[in-house]
Amino acid sequence: MGLGMSLGAAAQKPHDRLNAWLAADMDAVNLMIRTRMASEHAPRIPEVTAHLIDAGGKRLRPMLTLAAARLCGYDGPFHIHLAATVEFIHTATLLHDDVVDQSERRRGRSTANLLWDNKSSVLVGDYLFSRSFQLMVETGNLRVLDILANASATIAEGEVLQLTAAQDIATTEATYLQVVRGKTAALFSAATEVGGVIAGVAEEQVRALYTYGDALGIAFQIVDDLLDYEGSDTSIGKNTGDDFRERKLTLPVIKALAVATPEERAFWVRVIEKGQQAEGDLEAAKAIMARQGAMRDARDVALDWAAKARAALAVFPSHPLRTMLEDLADYVVARIN
Image (cartoon, rainbow, N blue to C red; front, side, top):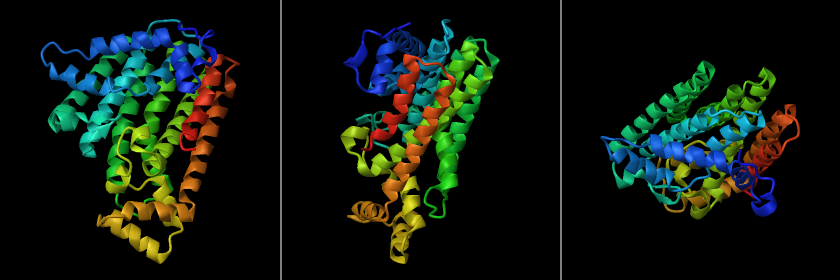
């Protein structure tokens, strides 16, 4: 175990402290990722995969699996398999998402679909999904397989739901939450839940880990949606305003629509529903959301979910990993301060 007692205040951000504490485990996960993304017959697979994986990213989801397992006292080998599984699923969804959204930047780099082509991105994503299932099976734990297989299906379902909800200004907060639970929170909750399952802890603790991951994932996505309007290209690693240009109904827009004047509603119909966007419309959208308090209201929702994530961990005894996971929930929302 990568014990971090002497690493103390060197890494102030919660995910940095987690990474330091779990350093040995993360090294093992990275080695497994490198080994399993190889292909004897199709060199493009490791090329495309390495482009995205080497671009950085916080490895947050596999770290959550490792942290959950270690918090539950696990000392076997299979949390490494599960963390690599989670990262492969996540990487596969990113490759597919960039094709669907016709994205050009990811983690500050050109996307794989831009550098290679859509076919390569889709097929390599499929390969990584297949690899993830091979890794799951190696644990020999049927419940783990069930959780991660369900998460994979839920992610795809959430993406399809978003297609039907996008550009529809009648989309409700409930539908938005369902999309978020699918495309983002499902993998967070699976990542934490399988850590408890592989450790064999009591059902109450397994459920708490699921609840933590679910709430953290929802808060994380709401903040991402806010950063698309309030962040910078450098801070989010992609182009700001992409959600607006892709006409996605995210929480800030839904909040603004709920209290829109007739004139503001006509604006949203034009730019989101009809897709008739002109120079200056993104700035106008930001001004409307600021005036209506939509950004503040969406941030309050994110804060509520972060608080739920923290509260879920109360069933665990005091532990440095518990503290780091609690702090992580706060940090996810603090990104928009």
